[in-house]
Length: 523
Image 1 (cartoon, rainbow, N blue to C red):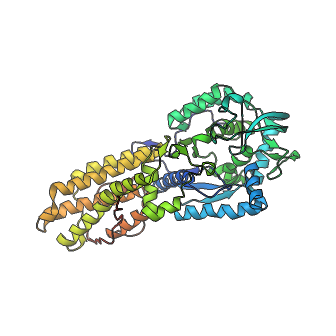
Image 2: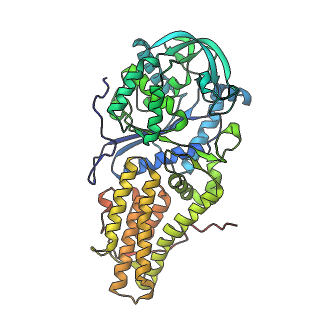
Image 3: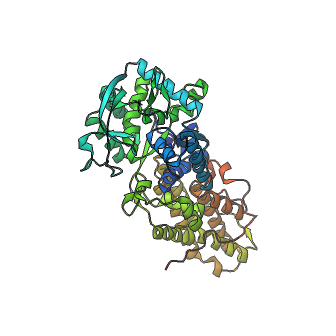
């Protein structure tokens, strides 16, 4: 297999408003099973889910992969502390991630565990290819190692007192025989590839960080350990266990048949987007493409690099004791309220500050006062002025232009993995519709054509809002869809045609129902 030599169009590339339907493959990082899922894990997973839901609306054949990382020293130590074999320990934690994602309405297509046979087959295949290419060689490592990062550090990368820059813990002094991947050989090839694919990493400033790492010089890195037994043995030297990054990163290939199902692999690789956090940028945007180059595997099309959700200015981590459990927040703002906050509150790529007051304020403002209020207001007036039957919209409604602009801006933002911008564009139509109602005040008018025109336009705008908002708030979107009398599922609709003005048929029963987002009282 050869590397692509020409820049590829980004997934979902748009010519005007035309979307080219195809396959769309997205991955989250796989999460360590040394602790239960927290808000940081949920953040990336919800973003990936919403992105995939958008592409399903576009008609793409989507594969959304998430899973758990179950090998390595960190897992062995956690298992030892719990008095369990590492496999037993992993088996006790991995289902909690799947359960959390189910509770958060994550529509993943595959959940991979690195203890599965398909994963071992892919790791063995990738290692052997790199070894046969002459890019893995035996040596001895002496230096500083952070167990929490599963990463070696040079002295200049550490904080004062030999502290890990991420976890603020003292690193270990390690000396052992390892096999090394000769990353230093790939500096020019990586820079050339990124030059040919300038939009591969989004947002741009995070991509520039990766390029800075490459330009500053690349060090060879270890691909094996002899002091560790919990992992996948090297195919040519079973006394060595595969080092975490050669193991973990390969899950993205394993899930599409690399090393086990060539037909599936041809269909789905290369991946469209790896969603990652900024703390694993080096491994995903430097190590991983070099490994693939060595193995003769096509490189990913894109990486979307997120920041952290901070609590009191610190990254969430078990070691710092500031972990926020996502399911606790669901009890306060509901599944869709939590999903919306994660997607809308922070521009993807930047760090965000999580607070209870912040999530409640966003819920009350955007969901209770805007979306929820619009749906309730329209249903109430339709009941009083139209006998509960929704009128059809006017073809020349002033809201039609707002709807078209909202769709184009929403689509453009999802194309570059900017969920907060996508939702801001969608909410602009909500605000325009509320303003339209306040201008015309149909609740003060006598039943008749003027009222029908205003309410028909509002129902059509609400229909389009429901489509555009559904990746973020899928449960609520389906409820609104049904309450305004529409058949089937929102997920059965196909963009861009479904967002064209005039799709609400009229003559459908409209129900108000219970409040979608009851306001939360604050002190």
